[in-house]
Length: 124
Image 1 (cartoon, rainbow, N blue to C red):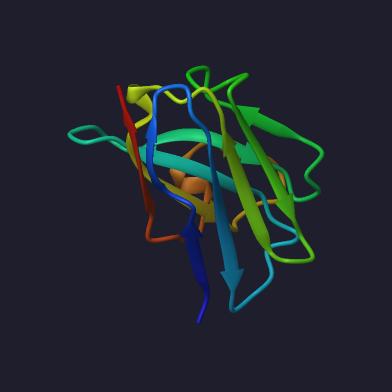
Image 2 (cartoon, helix red, strand yellow):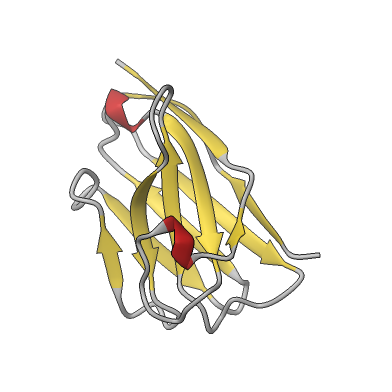
């Protein structure tokens, strides 16, 4: 059974940092792009960041560019999201996604597998 399990969410003050992790099991995604999405209360899920299979290429939503960094460790089948300078608008459930293509992908339909999400709350 393929699983993506996110961790690292929590409550943080404005300006703080968190590091999310997403560990895959059941198959390897070392040849696939991986990504992070988020869904804020009352809003649709939106793209946050994506990373190519090799880790050499990354792409970010404008709202998180220069504050968030996506990375991956293919030996551990894990993708990370380092979030700095957090704002209340970053409050959301964060989901990782994987599988479907080797190159970066920012559309939900590009991904075959999803995690259950981890909640991030940024207090003002």
